[in-house]
Image: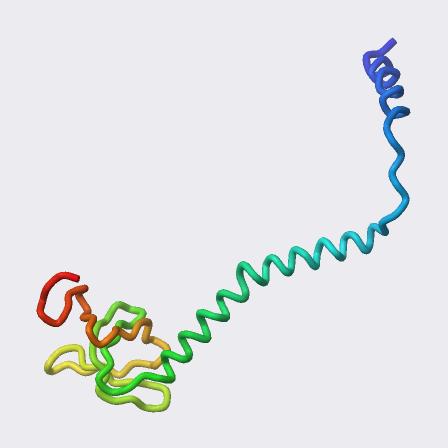
Length: 125
């Protein structure tokens, strides 16, 4: 007798003792429910937080005004001197002004906060 035949005859009693599947759930409904649950998890873990960050960034861009200290996405620190529809002019140094797109602004610093992590008196915060 081959080893597969003995294995097969050894597994037959186990298959006979296995409980039969319960009649009940439609596999199509179960798979659609699974897909729905996975989409809900994806929405609450990825899509919703990203939309919230995007909304906050758009609100920040719409509230830009002259005198705001900003940091751009490229890491340029400066002060806004002029705000137009889609762009801002940023004073980087005494003699240097840069025209940037509003979407390039990453952070608007708080009035008491300076660019290097120090307060107005030069003390480390």
